Length: 110
Image 1: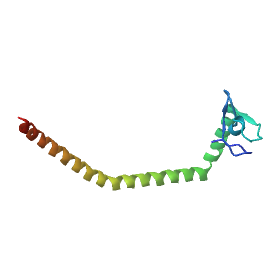
Image 2: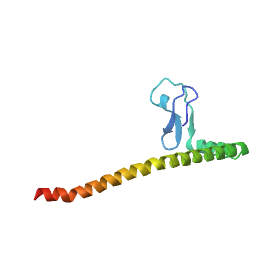
Image 3: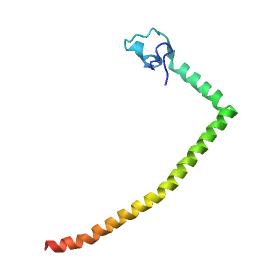
Image 4: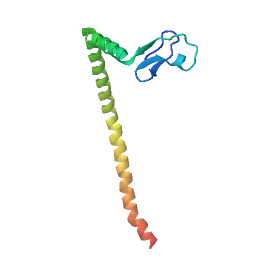
C-alpha cells in the first residue's frame, strides 16, 4: 500500500530491510532512486495512525462505522434466517424421503 510519488507504481521490499519503487527496480521508466528503511517506514505509519486514530473525530467516525456495519450485518442475518429455516425444512424432508425409499429399494432387489 505504498506508492511511488513519481510514477505511481508500488513500492516493495528490496532486500531485507529497504523499500523501493518496483517500477524502477524492474527496469521500468521511473526516475525515482529514493528508498526507505523498513523500520523508518513502519515507525512513520504507526505514528500517523496513533496521531490520527486518537483524535476524537476519528474515533467517533470509526465507532459510528462499526455500529452501522454491525447493525447491517444483524439485519441481514435476521432476514436470511427465514430463508435458511425454509431451506433446512426442504432438506430434512428430502432426507426423510430418501430414508423411506431405502427399504423399498432393498426389497425390490430380492
